[in-house]
Image (cartoon, rainbow, N blue to C red; front, side, top):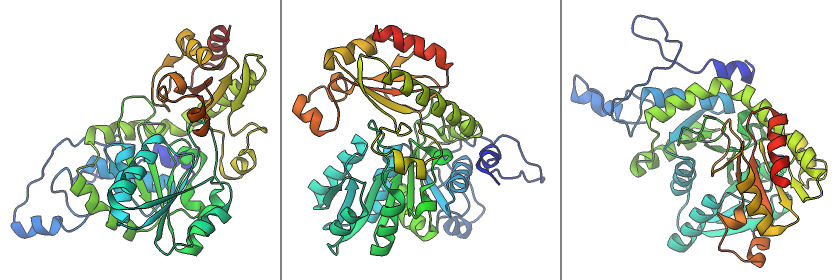
Length: 389
């Protein structure tokens, strides 16, 4: 089936009488009873047995996992309490002291932070690459302890799209496991497993749930044996998904393809309009021909995504003034919801950095990040225009 159809027809289990509920039921129970000790012990043996305890599995959570595996084309999935829970759970399950990780330079700050913590605590070496050239990976992976490649489909906030086909093919040839954060693209725009990825991570908080009311994460695996290696770490860390959050995500998934079309169309339109303004010195969106990743983005993405950033000529003060002047768009963290959100990294998340440090992080002092929602684009542009003026 096509992805639009799979998103609507989420995985669901029949009732005992053979009928199916159209909506996946919310099973909020934290524990499940058995008739015998032998049955209980057997159920605890792995991730796919009968339900025992919420940390080890739940019917609503499993429905989400099976649905996401289907959308990404994986053999299985694990749902987590947050996107960082998914990233951390995978890293902690697969890495050992002395291992080397090759990571794309433009990664989400939380991923950078957990890699830095692993390096400090356990002596795990982290080598940074641009993500544009497979030869960088080949050079970095010469070290025999290279275990993992970490990439993002679309980087936040620059919109960089790495050479997924080239990098993932090189990782396979080198025997290096690959982890791709697909949160900003969603399975609608890209399915990294089809390009050779081993694991795809999501912050389900973003586009998958899509309504700014969920905190959740997931990891989808090309090989079920890899999923079984990671599952015990989920149980040990207690990073499992909450059933209600899983239920809300399942509720959002059927409209994911529709929402992504609107996100992409609105972001592309705003990017073009912003580029025409004298107050704007640069616009970063992978669907624009002047973006450094435009060529590879056109090859691996079905759309440019709903996130864009732009640099204002007035620098830090102009960026801060803009985010305080918008009225329809909201000044808030996160992204991927139906409403448009704006942030100014230099005066919020990166406010402690001076101009040199911001430049090193790839963030201009006047950079504004916009998560474009599904509102009418004319209303959005009217708001942006008045804030620029």
